[in-house]
Image (tube, rainbow, N blue to C red):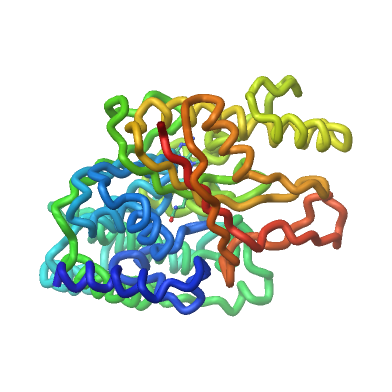
Length: 415
Ligand SMILES: C[S@@+](CC[C@H](N)C(=O)[O-])C[C@H]1O[C@@H](n2cnc3c(N)ncnc32)[C@H](O)[C@@H]1O
């Protein structure tokens, strides 16, 4: 079975046409266990590892989100260690579950027990719980949670907590098609009566099938995940990482993708504290006071100047994101091994009508902090990604500007 996976990769690469992967199954193995904003598709991580990680023994994803690169690394026998970091605890939990093989029969037995349960030992008391969930939904979610918490084996418990987290999202009063927290319209909400146990069962059965597929091809790769900011000292030896495969945020969470808002209700149900201001802690969460660009990137300087001429506040928001990102670059440069590859999947955004070439700015920032050869940029047309391809960056009601339709995959090599 393990050979089968390697053959599959080989075949995929032989059939290589472009980076769009329009028809690709993006939910194979454990990749479909939980939704997450701005997920990388597995085929991209797979191809990057195939092209630039032939000799790699260690992989790092400093913004691992739901763990796409980590899962792919765990399928490659040559990769001995894969590190993932994310400041969002839900992301780390999802990544852990997706990369921990489990016995499917154990899971099926446990599921039956959970579905039979009728009592709970109290509902959580977080703010606005009744605004986001109907009373009967709260009772049922609490019953499922109580049953899951009785499971002694932590890996099995975490597996069910992920299915529970996805259930929380699906049975909440939110408009599920959006990552930000918006409540359903009143008339829709009145008729809304989700079957919580059915939803949980459906999600878990799907996840068990994914886990079955994954456990057959999982290798011995050692996975190390940390709920830490990549701006801080990373617990990794200097010059030890052979390949980075990541998709970082491309702007602050408030004006681009709200990872914190997306995760908040699930985190509250899972008893995590201090989750309300997660978005302020992610890259670019706090605006800078000065508009002076100290980072050595000519493109960033030009962009900040242009945006600043139109709107100083917006320019500061953009700058604060890059100032935070620069702290990550210092860390990443320290841990990268010589001859190792840095592969970043990024989107370019438009602020105040000005296009921000994220790939170019980030490339310049790496070169300013260390010695890197620019290898290439692969272009990918985004077919139907659930992220804001349209928004109103000028904040004028009704004005829509296309902000993203291509992804840029830039590759650098450390000298
Ligand atoms: C584009 S998403 C990654 C998606 C991931 N590739 C996947 O397939 O699910 C970017 C991630 O960066 C995380 N992030 C933002 N600021 C961070 C920081 N300072 N340190 C670590 N992670 C951070 C966010 O929480 C988010 O999960």
